[in-house]
Length: 433
Image 1 (spheres, rainbow, N blue to C red):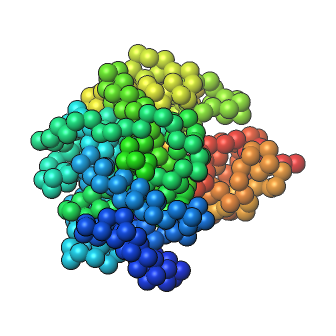
Image 2: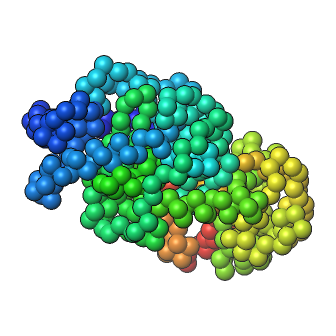
């Protein structure tokens, strides 16, 4: 399930067939566990859990744990909705006659009047409408962003202080049963999942990847909050809450809460690129059309030497220097172009993308590398055969004939700009033979 089009919690022919029997069994279990309480919509999400051997042995305990976990987490979850939210099919989530707005994602309400969530829960925007636990709606704005995980800290106007959410302090081992939860307009979202693996303070979830929305708090069966989900694609990662909050608040204290972009793809300089372009911190492999760098006059194959008065010697240093630039304020970049140094003034923009992922813009079309270069030349350049060739020796190429002609004119190693999986990159190709 993605932020743009939330899918169904229970889907597929097999699951639909199981639902008829599973719902009856789950409702019966609900009556056994809490015979004096009204059946809650969370009961209907337990059916997929009954498919596993472990849960079949203890269905009553699992049902009770999921139900209690959802109820314990509800006061600490907030939902984010888009500008034009869709409507969810009621039958997929609840027996009650409700038609809630489709949330883009959820988040965990902290004791400091903020919401810990994921950038995809906001659709990549810096602001979004938050639906608070009590049903109120307010505007939330991202105040800190961690690019590598996509986690965000959102400050919501008028968010009531609920006290600290009950957090899990003991690490959870692989194989443990947990639940990803959310709440909007009186409706409970519950996705039973398992901890498939642990990697530092991150968890890999399995069992219901298609049902997860970004930013959903992950709780154990005692209702203690463990982590926050990332984007709802398999394998789904979730990040432990306490370390995530500490990292985001440290970025705020360092003045690096919101990274900046200048609209370029930066690439490390290997020995072949150095032989043609010279040394430097990084080389510009792609320029976003109409972005800050394009407006300033920067080009592909410019070698970045300094950001402001800060020399950069590595790709990591260049990325960090750009990410730390003040937003919407002019900054000077020093580059080397055709063996001469030049300076350009750019105005960085705040981004909620990962600055280390570069930019993906309309890069044009071109021939496949395998249709232009020999196998030996591809091997030497470590150039994928299916990469799209965009330019050879600075000349744009839309056909294999144009690329081959530019290669012959080069008379030796030439700089090739190509695209693979939507991302531009530079490489040096030496004709074989």
